[in-house]
Length: 492
Image: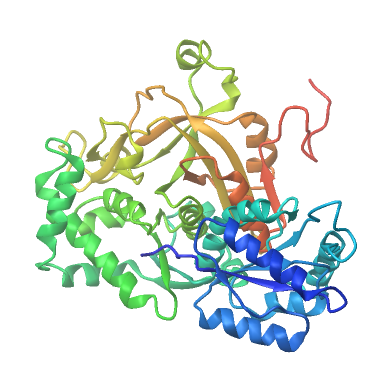
């Protein structure tokens, strides 16, 4: 319920000096070729009046994303005004010519018209999704539309998102804070609250009649021996507190993500660590970024929309020991040691993305700091610990830097089937040319230590989402033969 459902429409446009029937016939062929819900607007746009009628029609039909189809050359002003007036993401595609036997009355010149369309979109500072090669037959355009769906879903989500925060960033965690100016540029709203607001609401939920059902769900998810029975009631109470806050505070927005302060005061006041609850909400499509990482929450939410799957946020944490690499990675892969690292966080990764040995445990670092030396863990309990399961992954982030500029990175790789022999929610990650990417992107562009993780290869979708949102700087892990701008050929 926290992820948009895309309802797509298609509008054909026609240059008035070309046969309108050409656009209409080709539009119908796309609708027949597309295997999914696609509302066919009956209005073919030749002028601005038609544009107004078409936008009104698709809006009444409930469409929240649109395919603008150049069945022939197309009228560059009305067709681009569709993107300006329609309240949702737009994709622009054009018809390929169909036969050598019909290149007089059947020639549409949409190949040319797409150039003028793009030029006019730029003149009006309008964003739109244009596929890598946007000219095709009905079957080819139907495939392009399938690729547009996750891009549209993420854009709709961002434009209707509110990020709710509790507490300021922890001391010496400047990397988890950033100017909120970038959020407003993206169309995201933000509500910033005190930790005390959360505590007051949590106490009001004591004895909530829904708590037993949530406790039962938690117990079923983890299984006997993998959770603390005496913590379940507190954690269920906290989960309901967050869900109710999201519903009561999203206001005019449809979707919510959280960025919450989780230490050092949280465990002493709530009596547990919030990590497991964070993991559960992430699995429900409501990401909760740790340490008030606002742009981490935004990145996670975009990943959830793009993948329709659970996501997580991890520290780009520690190097892989050389003996581990030599024994468990080098013999079976082509990765270099510098291609590998460990991604870690205290325990916020959804259980469905972890190996079977995962369990609710205690946060070792917080136990050292908050509880007497040698004592049994108490308030430091509540993390979901274990190795992250082997999987393809996409490591990515959208960030507003100290100058107020939106920057991003995307790197595809995998979680290796290697035991970490460590604590927390953790995995051994491999990304091709990670060492160079680490130095020339993450360090050089001053990205923080948190990265969002989507479980699968979603680099293409995410890059198109970032482009649609107007992000100019989209970095990636470049192959060895492609140097970074600041990477010179000289060696020591």
